[in-house]
Length: 69
Image 1 (cartoon, one colour):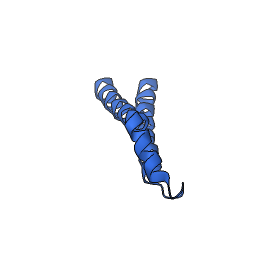
Image 2: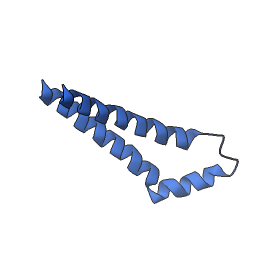
Image 3: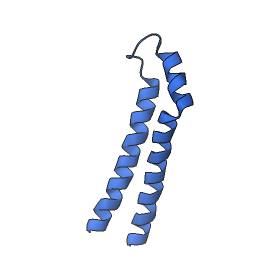
Image 4: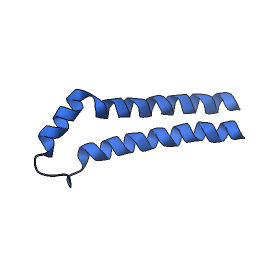
């Protein structure tokens, strides 16, 4: 049972990372000149790295849940 909880944590944390990164990219409350800053940030790879980490956690979590049966 503890392994299932750990695996679900990976899935939930992965989803939260993806949602947080997408919200950060699409948020309009940061300011008018945020567009250029967002492109600089994306070019730096921080947002993409967070999204990729989220996807990796999703895949690992689903794989562990499948193997836990």
